[in-house]
Amino acid sequence: MDEDLKVKESTIGINLMLKEVIEGLSKSRKELPCKYFYDERGSQLFDEICSLDEYYVTRTELDIMRTYIDEMSEVMGRQLMLVEYGSGSSEKIKIILDHVDGISTYVPIDISCQHLAKSATQIAAKYKKLEVIPVCADYNKPFSIPEPKNEILHKIVYFPGSTIGNFHPVEARKFLSRIKDVAGPKGGLLIGVDLKKDTTILNSAYNDSQGVTAAFNLNQLKRFNRELGSNFDLANFKHKAFYNDKEGRVEMHIISQAPQEVRLNGTTISFNKDESIWTESSYKYSLAEFEAIAKDAGFSVKQVWTDKNNLFSVQYLNVENY
Ligand SMILES: C[S@@+](CC[C@H](N)C(=O)[O-])C[C@H]1O[C@@H](n2cnc3c(N)ncnc32)[C@H](O)[C@@H]1O
Image (cartoon, rainbow, N blue to C red; front, side, top):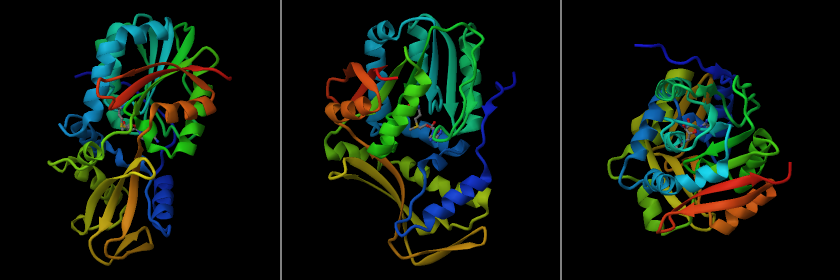
């Protein structure tokens, strides 16, 4: 079998992980950055989540993409570089690559390096004329977009999966503003944004009956034991997720089942019974709420596509103020 494509790697160090994990667990309200879900096992578990009946997000976004891909193609134009943030298994991009002519270069960016290398290699094997340059980076830290060999007229950033929902709204605005700088003056952003909906749908999407989301949430403790030498006893922690109506977000937590202490590189972290570690937020937006954030970040909303039940939206934004 051919080797995986070489991944251009920026710094994702163990020291930084250790520092951020200790900082997060030392807060009065314990929390962890959601990027640490995604070691190789975490990425596989996320893929399993995407195929669950309860997880409407992926299925609905894929349906919207397939239904409206011709309209999306029209607004995207030609001779373009497509930069995908949090590309994961690079599944959704295939719909674009199959239908949109004139994509010269594809730059998938993800923090899960091995998973990224595999997905990028599959894309390069399937789309032989496409220039594929995978970048393993934390997109919250400075990183550079590689220079394409192919000539391009403009850049479009693709950010699917409603990963933007993982940012608190103020941070989402700042993040979109940085994406605007990457896309440049004639650029655009094709983004998947999850919408506000019935609480029962949300609560069951993040508490699936097979326990895959629970395994995904707890997997990071296993990762810390392996990579940071901590001693989390997984039997003493439980997954919890619920929709916080006031804040408009699904919250994921890990709940300590007993008073306990965990050792982490010379630091002792104490937990009370029922104390939580806040591991992820997933904000749900109305179209108007998201438009306001996009506008503040310097984008204008050109087109919005939704499913018939208004569960999810895919939106094309133009760079407005550069
Ligand atoms: C919610 S998943 C979405 C995956 C895929 N785009 C989709 O739509 O199904 C988030 C993806 O972003 C990646 N990711 C999370 N935090 C990241 C970070 N700080 N920098 C780069 N990639 C990140 C994860 O590894 C994962 O592939």
